[in-house]
Image (cartoon, rainbow, N blue to C red; front, top):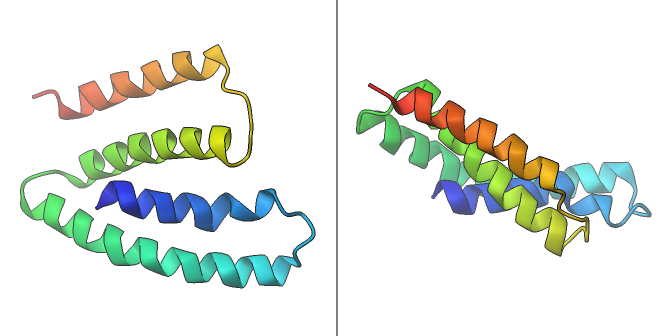
Length: 104
């Protein structure tokens, strides 16, 4: 559920960057409408994860990793932005954070 919710979130926040001609108020309303579906998936996913023993910190850290992976795919395929090696290094540091967050 978190993966699909992040797809909706990424589109809600960034789809309008490609079309600079759309009025800001329209972009906000459309984004808000898309974000509704993100909430419909994120809230139950977080509740499920929390009730099965994940901490709030762990849920947030995993959500950020998923968000970054989805955003990378979105930026390359939709926004047509190049993926640079320095992003790989940055993600490795974030993966280190995930490791330490889940370490007993």
